[in-house]
Image (tube, rainbow, N blue to C red; front, top):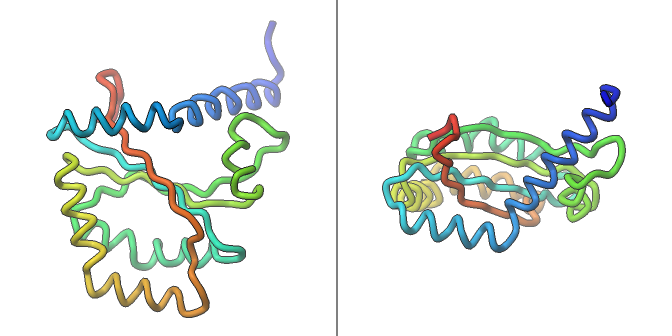
Length: 163
């Protein structure tokens, strides 16, 4: 039986959503933390989700576009990709994340580092950079942009195109 394109798209979205949220469970996080701590030389990918305060998503995006990504590179981060969530036409497994955010958009991004030690050093250097401190403070003049941040550490599998 061949599904219509809209049904195929919804089915694929549901499967990807299920995989994504299964991956983000506490058990998966614990396993990833253990892998990261046992593989000090393995590439570390860091997924971060920024849930904005009401009406502040564009401020977050502007800060990243105009300042943060460049500062990340300055401090040894590799910018892998940046995304904004969007609700589907109908609820799916993937919509669980959107439901936690009241159906509103969030910024997701992935950065990578050669290993966990480099990651920790890069973040420390970044958050203490005077340019970042200035940009951060200026972006909060009308109130904080980010309500909550989630993060997941990921190591690529042996069959992943990303190593």
